Length: 165
Image 1 (spheres, rainbow, N blue to C red):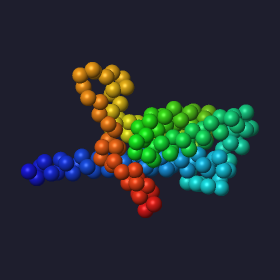
Image 2 (image 1 turned 45 degrees about the vertical axis):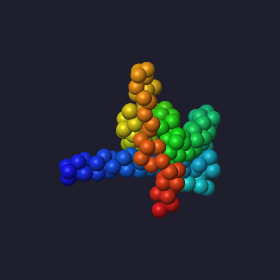
Image 3 (image 1 turned 120 degrees about the horizontal axis):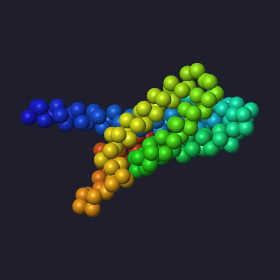
Image 4 (image 1 turned 180 degrees about the horizontal axis):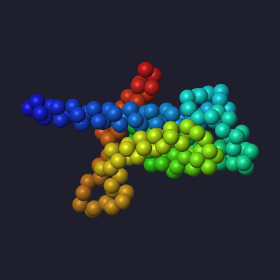
């Protein structure tokens, strides 16, 4: 009986860990996008606040606005429980785009930080594989499972409570 309780606790710890991964990724990208759009007036947690001005020198100002706006939308989606899986999927190309720009511009630390976020994102998507596998091939006789975020944390206020703490 204790072996079963230990197994359930380990699974619960894993669910909580990936909830925290989603909350961290959501908050980081929401605040990063807002920081870029407001030129550093809000949410200066990560990312250069004057990125759009820096990209303007290379004719990439519109790309900066697209990245910042996408970060806000995707970060907000990840923070919700219902649409967090959609946000995690949309975050992959954003991370790859940011990684490409930072590598091409020769920035020193940002590619490493963004690679870490990309790995966290991919780990969260791998964790949600039971819900994602139906996007690849959905057998007609199997029931489609919900993402773990909505199964184990059905209340919308749970992630918001952690953010306020």
